[in-house]
Amino acid sequence: MVKRVFVDTAWNSKPHTCYDPAEDMFFEVEDLAELAGRYDEVYIDSALFPNMWGQLKALISNGVRVFHFAWPWKWRRLREKYAKKLKKKFYGEKTDYGDAFLLSRIHDEVPKAFAEVTPLDVEFKPLLMKERALARQLMRLQRMLELGIEVEDDIRDYERRLRKVREEIVKKAVEKIPGFADIARELELNDNDINALSALAGLLIYLKWPYNVPSYHKARRFLGLYKPTKDDKRKYEERSGEKYVRRYSHHARRYLTSLTAAILVKKRILKPRMRHLREVLKRLLSILRTYSDGADAGGGAG
Image 1 (cartoon, rainbow, N blue to C red):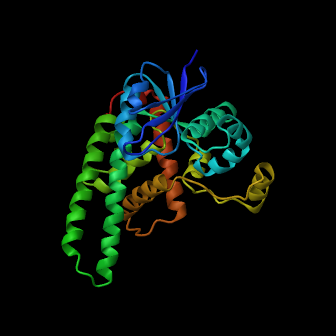
Image 2: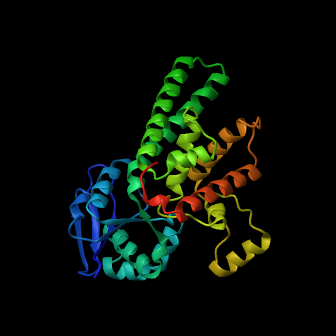
Image 3: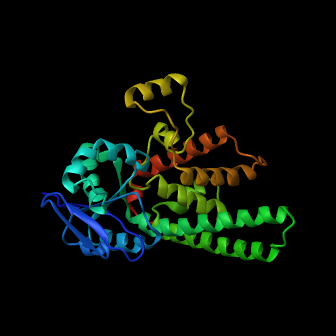
């Protein structure tokens, strides 16, 4: 029998609150790594704090499967749905224990609401978060420069730091992501295309390569490349009782856009359009399927 525990994660010095449904027991841990050896699967909420990646890596390294709640926009509605059970169990009080308990109820009813955290996630997501933070700050400084504010030295500093992080991402991708160098070569990228290569690495991580190769239909939705019709929206609203809101991974979309822009520049096309994003996505998925079908995904970085 698989032993599962559900965790409401905490920031900084607060302990993580845990619920064991098999024992109907609540407890706290200072470090998620303490759960290794006690449980086969750990389910956490959607709050993947920067200081947690080391703890998650320790769990996965010890053979524990880790899942995180992937539908945060549905949290409030699910809490309302289970309000009576929560009120009865916790006497009407809102506690971290209640959130851990709620995660277990969601898993019982909708297990697909949880996405697995992969070994490559714990290797790359911290670096990708750092890259995005530096890129945002650089864009902010560039806007300040356009307004006539003297930030040239800061811009040079952030450009240097951003390139260093991207080089680190690419180096790790060559070492850790199966087939990365060959996939880049198929996309006609070379060693000098650091921005494009780091974007490719980020996109592959978010697409869950090599653990999964999504269909083009699923990938389009995941990346926000699908434009729903009025009929699509109506059917969704009838089925779910909610207003249709298009949701997709903005981080993955950013990496696809950066990758597409770098590929198009070589063809002297300066502004990627939606059709260009779809074309590059199709091409990438075709390459991934070729590697997957050839069992190359099970080998080294290549």
